[in-house]
Amino acid sequence: MIKKIQDANIRKQTVVLRLDLNVPYSNGKSSDTSRIEKTKETIHHLIKNENRVVILSHFGRPNGIINKDLSLRKLLGYLNETLNLDIKFLPSLEIDLWSKEIEAAPFPSIFLLENVRFSKLEELNDPDFSSKLASLGNVYCNDAFSVSHRAHASTQGITNYLPSFAGFLVQSELKALSLALDKPLKPVTAIVGGSKISTKIELLNNLSNKVEYLIIGGAMANTFLSAQGYGIGVSLTEKKMIQTAKKIIQELKYKKCKLVLPLDIVCADSIIEKKEAQTFRVDCCPIDKMILDIGKQSQKNIMDIIDKSKTLIWNGPLGAFETRPFDQGTNNIANYAANRTSKKQLISIAGGGDTVSALKTSASISKFSYVSTAGGAFLEWLEGKSLPGIESLKV
Image (cartoon, rainbow, N blue to C red):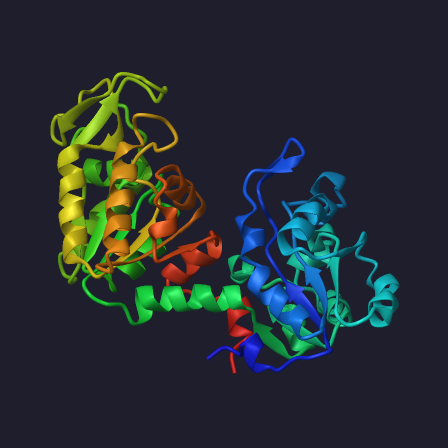
């Protein structure tokens, strides 16, 4: 059981708060500030209880080098506007410089420290750096589930020096994932898409022990189809993973998990928008075409499985969703799952960068039971791994 920030009764303390403010940013602006939106509940709780708050976060991958393009100063305006607060920016990691300023600030106050990854000691989980970060306050709160799979100074090391608690976003993520895997309503269906089996072997192995239906889509499905002897034309595939796919198929025969692959396929000469697409039976892929989506028969089969299911876990698109018309399979299934969810007939939990983008494109994201903004942490949880940043918050 994790320690929760609301149970700590913290008042007029200085709280070091780890957030994930690593939002997409280019050409002087952010295209998606949903991660900032999701920080509201924890920050407002802390400010309402008259605490000082010192925000820690990373932004991009500076690899321990100071990079003005990756300064958190760029996000200060978004934070102030979204949170309706006046946040003081601390423009370096010279922590000794800021400790006295923070201690002299009134209750409540809020500060944003410069990008913690400007120090190489952050990702090394250096004890001295962890201790310095801890010296900024007397309580630690982790509300950055998306980086809690990393044993870094600001996610794990700091917990060795301060009483540590989980923020509301972390609590929401853990509750949703528990509904999906630990105590799910059955039957459970998992949709796993994307391009590579090699990055998702552990995920497939763990899910196959926990779900009744395992639906494979995207280019991953091409490798499985090839493993079953189907021609896949010039489609994207991982030839080195065909034997692994054969092994997974064989192992699933002995588990209470049904593997679901495409029954029909949408093909084209290349992945170009508005390129003429044709649908074929899965055993009739032309030798000169690419598989880029699932067909209507496959969609109907997946919808029938969703009808039988009580819980749906989704990670990865079912086709080349970024390019029309190859987004139709993903969009149609997303909207179908969303409608079942809105009717209280399904618990639907999704996560991963491409998955979130696909659900936004289909306008179904708001109807899902829970959509995780975490990428790697979401995947590692589904793989059955423990997350260092979460383990450190347990009683």
